[in-house]
Image (tube, one colour):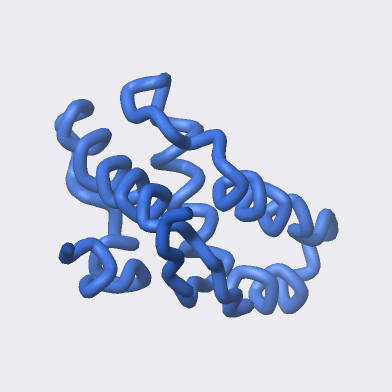
Length: 106
């Protein structure tokens, strides 16, 4: 059993992780079908369907604590660095604002 890390993220951060690890991935980085990713997808599915600004604002700012394995954290690190580089795009802001620096350092 690999070690786990508790990562605090806002729902905006969860959406950014899923965007780069699932939507933009196209199979370039493997390991995105684990329980941690499925949990993030389930959390994002709770997004309010109304266009009520206050409800949406509260949803995106809501903080969640994700328990991810070291492999999942490593996969997310690769997605957030490698995929933008493959596509010749700037690194996503989540690298600086939401994703904890200390996690990726082994």
